[in-house]
Image 1: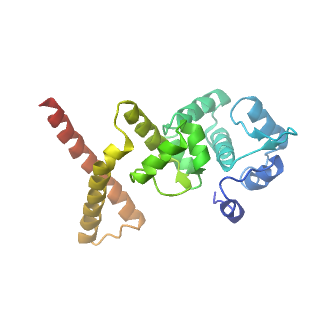
Image 2: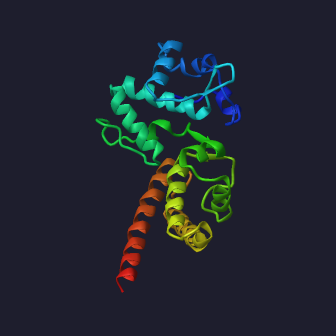
Image 3: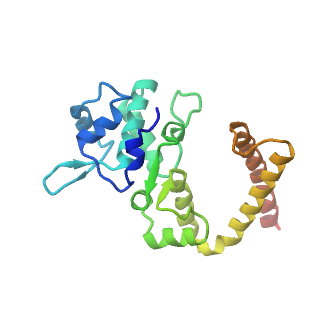
Length: 226
């Protein structure tokens, strides 16, 4: 289900009318109607903004949320109650496994289409613009105005750490260590003639990252046990 060029060319802060939402989704969901969109809103699954005149205005995030809802209905036959639970997990910064979908996660349906503006990232996580700026300055979030969905979980984790007194600036050394690990991963792939940008290269890189994380957790546990 490729994203349309029109959707990609619009800034993330753009707002869309119900008719424009239908234009973006009907190629994939031919039976979608305005009444169905209104029904999903009434069920609390999507909450578009309203103009002073009462017209609905959907963000790009709303559109991708609708795409996920409709996909879960059509391809996974999930009832709205279960879909609401999946959405609650996503809103909490997690990547839930879709019930009955052989360990397929929600992000596998959303990616690579789902991107968040800074305002949307703030709304989902409750983080202040200043805190997001601090995370960007520390190199813990990308220096951009459009963020991948994984940033929700990462920012939520940073907020929890900050509540314990570990602020983004305290994590600069961790970021530097992660960058050195990334260089090691690249070198390991290169030594085996694997291109990191290839599908196989990305898969092997993620396998190495998991191994790095296993070793790192062991070092931390032993250090804390002293």
